[in-house]
Structure formats: structure tokens, C-alpha cells
Length: 458
Ligand SMILES: [Zn+2]
Image (tube, rainbow, N blue to C red; front, side, top):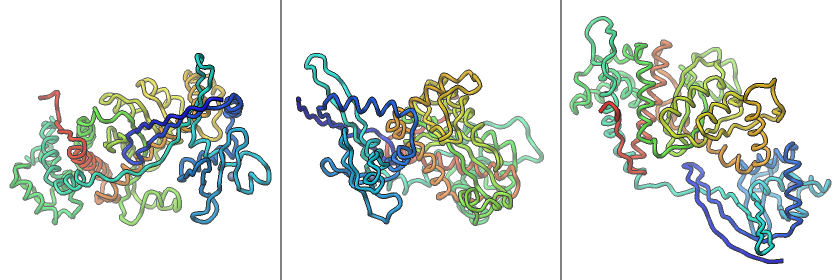
């Protein structure tokens, strides 16, 4: 037996849970290889322990000390953990499941998911090398200097960027009623109003300030702001501005995630509560459902669709991917289970990107009524079954889209003030636009990006 040890590390960049892979190469025996092959053969059907193991690996923090791993107990009290020795030929765990039945328990599976083993055979030296890739969840210190700068200058920067964006909208051909504010001023006013989060009357001093600085040509009456939001001509323009505001990050983003969330018309009702614990709230209140795709590094929103509260998630996926695909080179797209369909997988692949959408527990590898995407479905199913660890790493970027919604709601509120449907849609779009501008400001300080809009028009 030959022993060879090398260590190298690779850092992959992901804003929230920056992950470091520590790769330790150690030599191994042939039996190890056989065990792994056997495991791959079983892999086509994940049993319940494997599934639970994957869940633990994805959600709990496993710690290592020598060859022993400490796996937090799922059911037990806080801080309670089991000790796993992931020996390849006879893995051990001190939980009742393993000790009684002598089977591979969920804790052993969890450790195995964390340690991804790869085998390579060297012809020259006739030795086999086992590579262990250990995924370590790491938290990074916030870039405080850049963060402070971005936050302290945000309101000024926000107005400058919003002004630049609005300049490009032009004037819609249709003019309704009496002469009104120029269209660009109108969009500036409503977006800045949503950014300020205060009532219309209290917003007036902000707006006068913006007028003094030359961002708008005249100050409208405070009642006019809500009238502007009622204008349905605004909706496609706001959507366009959201897309345009994502373009300065074209070079930064290549992984994207999709999700949806609702905004209610009542301040005291939250989407998550209504959806999961109190369904009557869904029917009692007005909701606007926002479907969006965002870049996972900066949380910038690259595409958005608005539907009513009961609209399914799956049909929105294609449009979001296609819009993003027009502006960005996509490498990965991750989404939650409800988005899984042959068509959606195909849409992502058509854009030369890799879909990371988990298969449901009842998904099968066999064909489904001979749909054209059957081969792809099968391929993805096997990829998912055999490369759990790799899959989970990429799929986990999906959590960034939840962060995006959290950012939007915590900063600009999860309630809508508007009373009519059109105004509610416009208000929700304004929140997304404001979020994008804030992401840009953050990127200006952290990534030293200088945003410019309407490049082609200039
Ligand atoms: Zn166990």
C-alpha cells in the first residue's frame, strides 16, 4: 500500500454561504472502489435513510475531529449529536438505528454526502488514489467598509441612478386627459415614493428635495402620486426598467434562481402564514404574486412576472428564463420542486445552462408518455441520483432567491398601500425596481462597478 497525502483548497464564490472545498488526497485500496460501485448501483433508488441523510447534510452543520464526525440529532435536544466513523468498509454510528439493526443509518449517509469520494487510477505507478472532497459551510466576515459606504450614500446614489434610468423611457404615444408631468418624472416620483416607504404627505419634502437637485422638472401635488400608480401604461415600463437596471451586472452573474412570493394589501398578513398555516387569509385578502429570477451573487432581479394569488409557479418559469437569457449568459438555474417539468428542464438546457430542480419523491426515471424531453428527463434524473452532493451544492444557491424576497420585503415592506389592482401591480414592481437599484449601489462599492444604462441607445 502506498500512502500519498496532498492538500489543496478551492474557493467558490456564493454570496450567502460561501463554500470552501478542502480537497485531501489519500491513497486507498481496491475494496474501497468496489464499495463505491455498489453504492452507485443502489443509488438509483434512494431509500428513506439516504433521503434523510441528504436532508441532514444540507441543513445541519457537521463537524469533524480526526476520523470522527459529529452529526447533530434531528429529533433530540439542541447540541445533541451522534458520532460517526465513516470507514468505507464498515462505517459506524452510535445511534440506536445503527446499533440495533447494523444498517447504514441517516447519519452515516449524511457524512458520506459531505465527503464526496472520487477515485482515479494511475497506470504508471499502478496505484489508486481516492480524492475526498469535503464541503465545509463557512461564514465570511461582512465587507464592512464597502457596506457602510453603500448604506450611508444610498439615498443620494439611488436618486442619481433612478434619474439615469428614467431618462431612457421616452414618452408613451398615448396621452390621456390634461397635460401632466413628463412620463420620466412620473416614474421617478412613484419609484422614489415606494423607496421612501412613508405616506404620500410625508413624502412631499423628499420630492421637493429631489426637485431642488434637478431630478424632476416640477413637484406634483401629493394626491397625484397615487393617481400615477393607477396608470396601467406604467406597468410594461416598470418591467422594462427592472430588466434594464440588471444589465450593469451582466459580467458578474451566471447562476440564477427562481421563486415566487406574495404581497398582501394588509400590513398584518404575511404570505408565508397565509400559504402554510391559515389558508382563509388567502381568500380574505387581496394579493399580488410576484415571480422572479435573480442572480445569486448580488441578488439582482433579472426578470419578473406578476400574477394573481392562485397562479401556479410552473408556467411562469419559461418566461423568466427566456427574459434573463436575452441579457445574461446563464450557467446554472436553480428552482424548487414545483418548477419541475420536462418543458422547464428543456428551456434551461436550450439556453446552454444546467438546471438544478430537485425531483419529487414520486418522480421516476422512466419515460412519461413519450414526451420529446424524455431523454433529458432521464439524464437529469440519473444526474440527480448519482451526484447528490454536487447537486445539493448547486441547488443550494436557490436559497438566494428567498434572500432576495426577504431583502425586498424587509426594506420596502411586504404590504401594498394601493387600493386598485393596477396600482397594486405597479407598486409591487416599484419595490422590485428599488431593490435592484439598491443592489447596484452595493455592487458599486463592493465590486467597483460603474452602472450605466441604455448603452445601445447612447
Ligand atoms: Zn446513526
